[in-house]
Length: 308
Ligand SMILES: [Zn+2]
Image 1 (tube, rainbow, N blue to C red):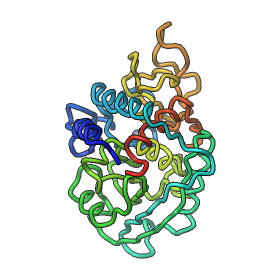
Image 2 (cartoon, protein in one colour):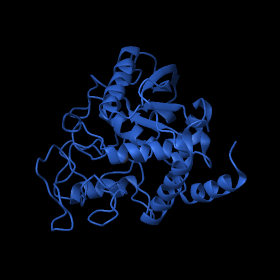
Image 3 (cartoon, helix red, strand yellow):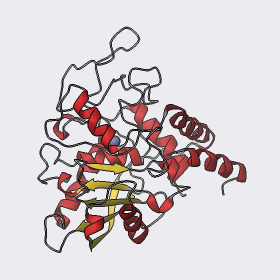
């Protein structure tokens, strides 16, 4: 049972943190700001797709959630072990009519779960996923829902299942050039119904959104759901994404720009982490979580999700 003092501290952190809806434009880039960044950063996203609408936290908020999770984890431990029960996945297919493109088949859902499992098994972290249920809903408003909208709230209030350690995935046709968005673990306490991951339906394996159709949009968004930030968060600053073994990166990388090194100088060793799942590169380019990211996931999982 959690002690009251833990809960109060947790609530304090959570209120300052993440819910997509509580973050103002001043605190984190909006979807459109991210779109503008994609155009401005000189790396050209030629595909007209914005990898992620998850809103970055400002540094102080991100650090507060991180410090709290690491402190809790230091007290209680609890890394997942290989072979531990997989995380249940409730998949909500939002479509614009039964049998239409967004009504993706079970075979693609199963293929996506397999991609998730391969990605996280690669990280040797003990995190795996098992499909627990599929719902199918025809709803025009939810079909094009994006983060922070009334449609998102209505969709999630109607469909979300389980508790903090159950993964809810919504697939729809979100528009705005977006591929997906997610909520962070620290926001669960204040907004449990909003917790989860949304992905563009055609980003699943075999989907039509080339070159984002091998399932790594879900891998990336689940990374946020497990507590990871973008590798380019913080740009060329010392704190960066609060993970020590991902090299600093000034802005998102698109395509697969090998040897890109956007933070120069002795202070920032190493080329950009373009193969990391938490960058914006093409699916075929990304295949890495670092051990620093895994330890961050462990702290966040233990503090905010496991058994909550
Ligand atoms: Zn993201």
